[in-house]
Amino acid sequence: MDALSDHNLLGESRCFLEAIDHLIRFAKTDATLLIEGETGTGKEIAARAAHEFSSRQGKPFIPVNCGALPESLAESELFGSEKGAYTDAKHARNGLVTEAHNGTLFLDEVEAMPLKVQVALLRFLQDRSFRPVGSMSVRYSDVRIIAATNMSLERLAKNSEFRSDLIFRLNVLPVQLPALRDRGGDVILLAKVFLRRFCKQYSLPEPTLSQATESWFKRYDWPGNVRELENIVLRGLFLCKSAVLDIPLPEGLSEVAATVQSLGSEAHFSIAKAAAIVDFELHYLQRVLHQSGGNVTQAAMLSGTDRSAFRKLLRRHNLSAEPFRIKSQA
Image (cartoon, rainbow, N blue to C red; front, side, top):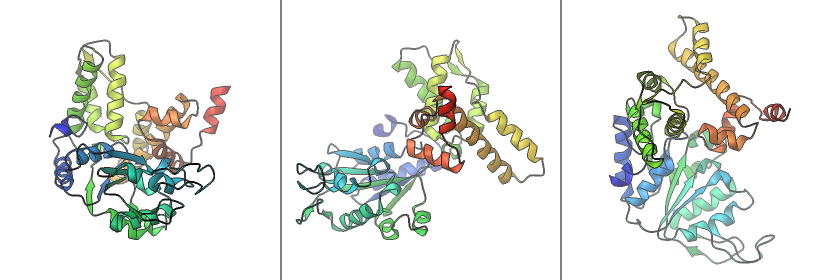
């Protein structure tokens, strides 16, 4: 369990322990592993732990963010290319599949993989054979595939945005990482672990969490999950001026309370909760865009989410970063 305790895969809730139990059991095989979970739940950490618990420990662990691969070069990035295969291909080059030989290839945000590359991946998953771009020769790589997604691949397949046959190849051993809001007291356990770790890292005296902070930690929905909690604890620690760490409510929660109150007591719980989440997300996105001057990459870093997930939130709320850039330059 040391490989887990050294990371953020810590918790005592039943749903979390079940997910970790599955992860450790599945780590002992070479079958393809699919890790599902919201942004910030620790999918890459889980993938690294699965690699460390496997017989491939000590061999390469190659992570690749499928959402960051240029569509025109995605296939050559994964499977390599021959000299002259495309413009500027002045030399033959190995792909990530070859770099991960005897180890593990981690495909993060696999839902963002271009459809053309999905076909090549499907073929590779069948017998670990592939052809570099521009090559007629078939090559092989002994590599375990671990994929991760924060979206429903089945829903994407219904919209023809993901190949349904590839889902069956990826979803051999599924692990669902639970959202932090569903993990009960784990939020306080993790907050204290982060606090102790940061105090040691930065040689700071360790404060105690105030009761008010623990209270809203337990009530908060944590859209950024464990990553968001880690960022909030770190910011709070640097701003702390006493032996008690009192982290204020994030701006926007007061607007959420007003939204719920306006619905009236007759509103169904699920309706009130959904409205509160929408209202909070909107105010939160506006705030970090303002803080970053409309820089989406910086705003994503401030929020503790990756850039593609942050852009999805912007699209969901029909928000553009442009007005915030104009204000910041005024």
